[in-house]
Image (cartoon, rainbow, N blue to C red; front, side, top):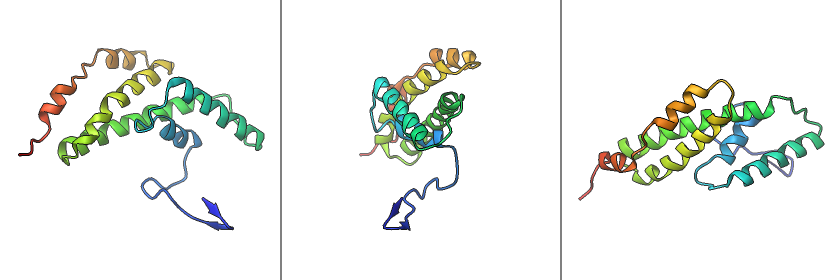
Length: 139
């Protein structure tokens, strides 16, 4: 972030150079945001249009890379939610497993060559009551 000619770093967790698609997917597929598919598409289209208008070259594989980044980010988030909820006993993170898993299924269905992973996800039972039952109980 730049303000009055000074650069400020505001993301200390994953601060490193990377793909614009990863940051965009992280924002648009964050389960805390609760965006609809239509809103995600509209925002992605807007980003692409604005980047193009600013002279940023948007390659023909931009959306495919975006989907791959979304898949990676959602898998990372699911691991974090499970760890934070079950190991660190921060149970509110378990609430985000179902929406993140649903988004992961949707994203994987769009990625060519991942049909087998899509079938696995479609047939993987996601029993949140079992997950919650494994969560530590507090008196």
